Image (tube, rainbow, N blue to C red; front, side, top):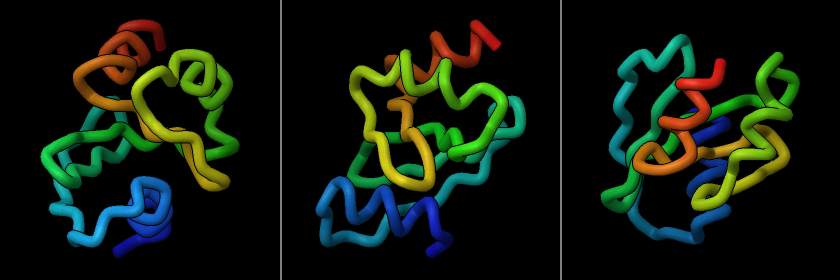
Length: 80
């Protein structure tokens, strides 16, 4: 489990290990866990503030913003 997967796991407080899907989304990592998929926007990324503003159904951690693919991530990808 990498540092982003670990943080998302802890934020969601899930006990299952996430299934990782390394599909490329404009260079961003996608994590699938508990039947939901999230786009990882690391802290310090040039689009981090946009991701933070668009995060409605995801999670904000110390390492990254985790945008839910079905909602905010699509809008985010269309705006970068």
